[in-house]
Length: 206
Image 1 (cartoon, rainbow, N blue to C red):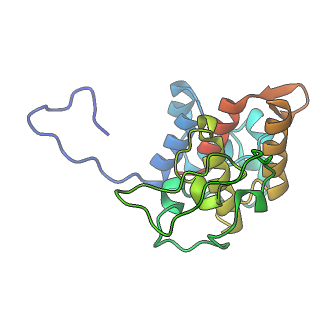
Image 2: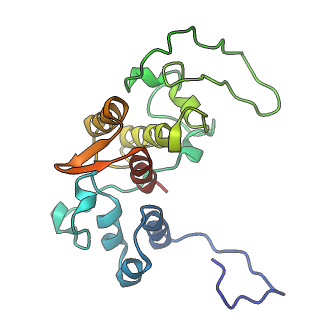
């Protein structure tokens, strides 16, 4: 990462992120303040804040005692990783979004899917109902704040056992509440809007 005193005449390439650096980046994406980041001394402490269920993310995250002797699996991969065709999936790439998560029909026929597309274009489903999981890993105009994109990545990470601090029912409940009420309640009296749900989901993968 570039510093404030970087020599402009000689810019060195940024080194690859260490595991700790990746955890710090996830914390930053989750909205943690610089002061909190500066006080964290270990990967396990960082993981205890990032690798948490929605309700757990609201409580004190500076101790791994919440998990007992074993730290949670916290190796979630990004939508950019999962959309690459050379990476194997733990489920079929033909699964539709509605095979996992509820989505209302748009009331019209879904667009016809071509065998291939030129110039890097992709199928445009137009709605969650018409999309495959794979479609959702590309930005879609209807997917506000990319919450569906990050939901699919979380699902794949869960199925691949890269994360274990959240389960499929958690993801389904999060999505269902958001779609039916416009907000999700991770714990009593607390409500997240679409952007906050997207931020949480984005924070749990690299």
